[in-house]
Image (cartoon, rainbow, N blue to C red; front, side, top):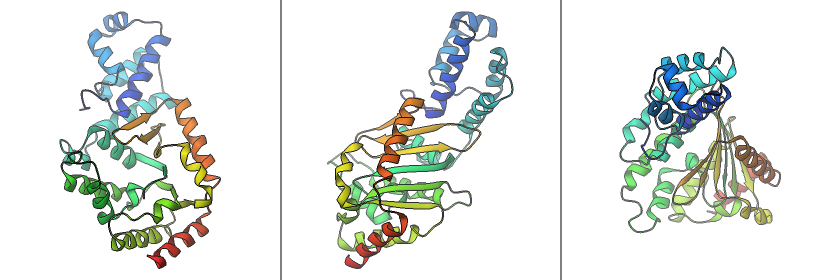
Length: 284
């Protein structure tokens, strides 16, 4: 069930598509509800992404709107089915924010993930000690259960070790790699870990060198998630310190793709990025 105050990405995407289908059919909610046999409140809740529609109900509603076999129907059915799937994140419900659970769900379903991290090592590549040091540095009282947050981040990282792991590309600033998080031993371990994962075929690390620091102002940290087909969903999640901002509209996603490509154009290639990491390991 979605958090009552913040519908999930899947729920919103399904609801938006159903609203568009109803409007394309030139039906008001009242007319659609009378003809389909469900209450106006049910239509409103589903269209606003506040409740996950059952796969069977979705199929019948798509038939009602005349949306037959094709990419849109396949995509919506897939998203509805995935939303019902049980997964490891349920063990963290009540301890982790709904937005963070949604983020982990996107990671698990992605075919590719692109991330820009100007200040820290990306969460999926952090060591446990590095994560704990980052969490401990938060504002007093802002983080009440560090152990749960650390456990959650470590559990998220399993997505990169599974047989069908997503393609993962990260732009990391050289300055972030040079900053000390925790003590020197923690940073040495973190850099060693990055040097290891940088050799994996499905992970690309791209260092934005200090000589290109002028580009760091362009954006806050963000991730671009492209879900596996037939979900046909790309979502941007930006880290705005106190909350995650989810962008799902085509224009917003395209803008972040352009930003990512622009930043990527001034990064070091992978061999030179690995050289920077290895040099930092030697110096640490």
